Image 1 (cartoon, rainbow, N blue to C red):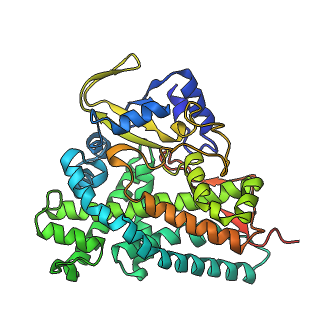
Image 2: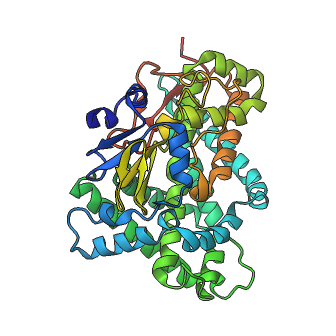
Image 3: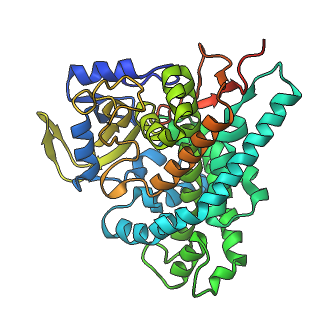
Length: 417
């Protein structure tokens, strides 16, 4: 059974997900972090993500597996354990309220013009690249999908634009660790070095930031710094402050870039849907929602059992790992009509693409905004856009957590004649 759950690099994991759903509501798998219960159905997934008997504080046995005596390993564990993503209860709620101010409607409205300009500029560069070599396709992932969210999150955090390549490089080292169900020692060491280097970067940033003395913080990092100076719980020491900064940067870039690639690939692989968006770019929000459901950038989320309980006849003990397969839940026929179809016009109930409950993604509105702006511009600018290699999507391998493309070769004006 466990071999069916995880097929790292599989071109399409969804048949395996469907087989698990049909086989039963709960499964034990040794493939996740030394063993965990696996859930595939939407109702169960939503219950676990909302239920306080399942804790998000799950980094201990995961991050500390393997070698633990290196200095980087200790710093790595401390940073992960203190990040918002892995906190519960009041520790989580207080930090979340503070951070949400950086993602509210006012903040998104202020960012929209900049995102539109950045998206246009990246597409201009891509068009110039195609014009210079019309016989070669351009890579959407390298040209837009990676660069747009990196620029947006840097802008939101108030970081220099010239630092984006370095920050993205660190994210690229962390992603394989988070994305693997059982990361190798080498993958772990690279992630440790990257996260510790990123924390050092933010330590220097905070040391020279005028936000240290500001009473009215100008941006999200300034807001965190001011709360740190005021001794807010969760930010009252440097580790808590750096943990939030590093996770904001990583999370704000990694999953959004996969959405920006997946959405384009899905639309072009389904010509009727692409034609519908071309005819009405106002369908961009619906296209983003459907892409998030159909090829969810984050395929699962983990929890730890806090209180022993019984679920579908199985006894779950305190400390047991629980894996919620979001990618499977988002194709559950009990929740969605024609779940395997990609259809931007079909009314859909909300998916679990951004999670659910207290830990629902704080950057969901920003991710959707980037996707909507990008797809709207795309439909207006290049109506003849086409996949250069439609038969071979280049999915990121060996990272079952993430569903995204390494590259996406495109013809901007249709295939050359």
